[in-house]
Each structure stands twice: as C-alpha cells, then as structure tokens.
Image 1: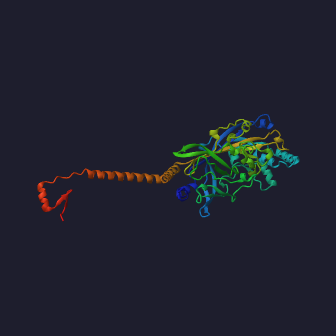
Image 2: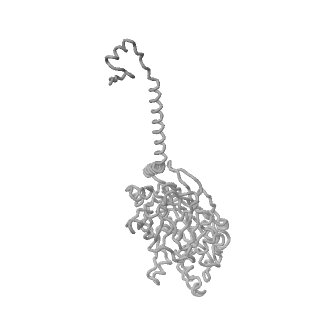
Image 3: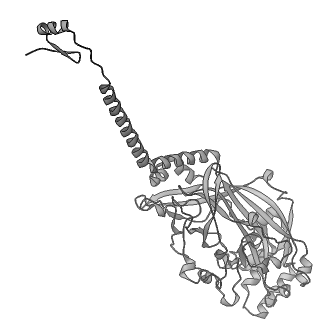
Length: 464
C-alpha cells in the first residue's frame, strides 16, 4: 500500500520532483573586529555575528529516470537561490565583513612541506602585492565571488586557476551530481535510500571503508513506519560523508504527528571517543577534537573545517578560543521532523558552520603567531516547513492508511453488530409468537364446524 501511495500518486511524485514547500537558506557571517591584535598574538579573535541574509532556494529534480524495472530512480537536484531582502537583516551589497583571507591561507596550506626557501619566496611575493591574512569585502562578494589579486597572479603561472573566489561561487544553478535512489518496490524499507552517487557506491577519500560508505537517504525522504529506536543515516555531499540521527522527541507540525531526529554528539566526535570516526582523520598526529571535521580533502586542499554553529556539540576549547561564540541548543541544533507512518519530512533545520584552520606555516611570517585556531567564517541555516496544501494531502493519506490498517477490526466489529441484531430479532419473534391469544369456540360454532370445517389459529382447515 505504501509503495503504491508513493509511486503511483501523481501529486506525491510531482512533489518529490519539484518540492512545493519553500526552502530558505540563511547566512550568518562572523565579522572580525580586532584583526591586528589577533595577528600579533595579543588577543584571541573577537567576532560579531551579522545577518541573517536570507535566500529562497529552489531544488527541482531533473533528468528523472526509472531504472531496473522501477526498483530504482535516478535524478539530479538543481539548486538555485533568490535573495529575499524582506527576510534579511542588512544589505548584502553594502554590509562589509572582515574575515580570513581564504585564498591566501589555501595557497600557504598547499605549500606546506615544500621547504623554507620556497615558502619564503612566495611569502615575499604575497607581501609585494599587498596580500594579508585577513580581507574585507561585502557580503555579496564573499558569497558569490570577487576577483582576488593573488589568484590573478597565480593564473599567469597556472592558467586553469580561477581568479575569482566566493563561498557560493558557481553554486547558483548547480547540482551535486547524479543520485540513484531505491524506490522501495522490492523492499519498502529501502525507499529513498541512495544506491549510487556520481556512479559510485562508496567514496574513496577517507581512510577506512566505514568512513567512505554512502549510507541512507539524502534527507528528502525515508521509508515508512519509522520507529523511535532507528538510526537514520543521511549522506551529505557538503560534508563529503554520511551522518546519522537519533530520535529526540515527539512533535506536531500543522496537525501532523512527527518524530524529531537529530545528530547526536557521536556524529562529529573524534576517533578516540567514537571509533566509527577514526577514518575521517587523515593525519593521525594532528587529529582534531570533538565537534569538528576537516574536509580539506574535498575542498581542493583549502583548510576548511566544518562544525555545527558556534561549535554546538563540540569540545569546549573551540568556543573558548573565540570571543563572541556561544552555542545554544535551540538556535544551533540540526533536526528532522518526520511523520513516522509515511517517513515524510514535515519540518527540517540543517545548520552548519564553515571554519578555517589557522596554523603556523614555515616560511610565512604572517602565520608566526598562529596557534591552530579553528576560525569561524559563517554558519548557514537551511530550513523548510511543509506547506498547507501538502499538509492536507498527507493528512488524507494518513486517514487512508489508518482505515486500511484497521479494516480487519472494522470488519470484525460489523460482524459482531450484525450477529447481535439477528439474535435480538429472533428473541423478539419467539416472544411475539408466545404472546399470541386464541378466540373461544361457541356451541353454535361447533354445529357450524360440522358443516364448514374446523378453524385452528384463525386458519381454515378443510376436513378430509
């Protein structure tokens, strides 16, 4: 029944291809207010939070094709963004943010281990063109790109270098590659589970097979009849890995009952505290602590570290190393609210923080006072709440599922009611028959009987 509901309902399939609920993505930037003091090693970085800068995100699925006799379906999810000034605080074209010079740090990180003289030469060259460890740009430039002087110089040496840098550069109108999903036709528990990503069943960037596994769904749908004890796996291309979520509590969204699942602390715990995560540390002598993940291996070597906002669920030392960082569970938690019967998300908040690992690099004087700070750049909040029309459809589906699942009970109850009615009718019939009275027969009638026959119970019977 559930497979038919999902795969034969035109409206449900259309909603999967082009989700009607609006998806919003908010960007919160961290502005550094004391760059010179921090650079000299006189103070820890002092940050103020800017934003949100809110965009409407559109995520239609393209090139949707059923394969393997309907057991699987392939699709690309194309993402586009439209700025919503009415839902934003500030003007992204005007607001200026001072933060880490990510292109410069990426270049320095790539030159690690290449020797003092090479690094020193590049350091002098960077100084001659005015490159520093920090930069100031508008929020729009930070998101969608600006022409960087260092990258422009590098392009003359290496022509395939992109001289523009932006955190969301080339993301508008892009996709994360082809996903192939199980439809649940063969086993309803497989519904929405990823079969391959970019043609591969596993990644090849991490140290262990367990870390390289592509587990679970992409977060847009799960199998029906969820239980509170389940471990829900979600593959996230932005993190280059799968994460899992556990049941937290029961909630209700627009009249629809839901289970809230959220990533536990173990998801981003270090390998020493969670052996499952040992494969995510590629440099055993420099493994990070709880709550952060080094993803430089899938960010072209840039020392990018991801975490939950304000280092939520992370080691205390990361938050204490920065002024202006204060994790709050309600504001910085990632969660999924799923209807357990259908496995459909009715509300979701995906929150993640992008950080840069600032370390001392031999040969670069700019880094001489750095001590391994995980420096927050921004955090994003990607949210969606089911729209009213979709909520009404789900409520109807839940009613159908409830009626079908209780059909044997309804049928049994109707049988009992019919049996009771029959018993009552039979009892009344015999009571009426017992109470029937007979009229006395007179002598005159006896004489008449001899001529016209005998009457029994008002019914004439002829004598034979």
